Image (cartoon, rainbow, N blue to C red; front, side, top):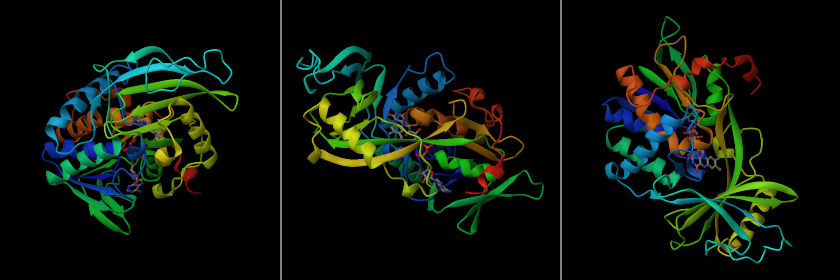
Length: 367
Ligand SMILES: Cc1cc2nc3c(=O)[nH]c(=O)nc-3n(C[C@H](O)[C@H](O)[C@H](O)COP(=O)(O)OP(=O)(O)OC[C@H]3O[C@@H](n4cnc5c(N)ncnc54)[C@H](O)[C@@H]3O)c2cc1C
């Protein structure tokens, strides 16, 4: 059996790895480069039970366990490390508490920590670009193939429902099964199959070099910026980089993933906020100013499973803010579904693409 996976983000990489563990032949087709989009630019924060009480709970818990196991199984260092997580706020200028030393010594005065919301048992982090690359490399080492090319359609058999392969740059790659894992660009696949809408939600981020001595403290802070309350997330990583993000906005998704750029005003605003958090966030320490699009669906849950009214067509996307966390269990479940016909670790019923109305393909024709 040969499976073609469309998209070399974290979901495609994990699906490829677990399919190879099942001995299934895999070709990953990636338009630009592995982890070129959100999977290379995310924070990489992982939480065991922050999805408790939602349909994502089992997927998140299984993924959290797999994240802890994968460093034993796969070559490479992607900075997996358990961490603490704290909530707090930044005092406005002029606030009487502005000179108050922070409870965490690496933070500036006036950054007030109000509670611990994660411990090294329940929260962790990976470097998402290194993680995605390491998992894909592990799949390649087990015999998977990576091809750089743009998927432009699906090829079906004479019955009109059975997948026979994918169109790539004017050619065809034959397959017994096809997985759409193109993140927000999965939207385009609604032209080729009965697929609910997938949207892109843009977020800017800045990566600083803060050195390896900063403790593993993730921060979720409320901060005033230009007269509005803004939530900012701070993730120091094992390689000495720190990822800071805030200010999500709605922006048109460029057709080419390589054309995603940040909004300069949003980056400037984010940088001003970062500089209030710690003397470590200095302009000369900036490694990257970037943006990426999270894949989101109408009900906020991912689409993971078989495409209705078809044979051999699957989708795995729409993971929103938890794609790095939930990739391993998604890949594991997709591999079980494709190879065995059923999943054994996580029930995919809440994520069945059939639960949502398919997008009307005529809405995409102008694109
Ligand atoms: C700022 C930010 C911070 C985040 N932080 C976290 C976090 O801390 N923890 C967490 O769990 N999640 C986080 N996320 C969410 C996470 O990044 C995403 O959910 C996840 O990366 C989505 O992965 P994906 O593989 O579905 O999509 P993507 O990473 O978008 O990958 C899709 C791939 O498909 C390729 N592609 C597109 N079109 C085609 C085509 N026609 N043919 C072939 N290939 C194609 C693209 O080039 C791309 O490489 C964050 C997201 C953002 C934006």
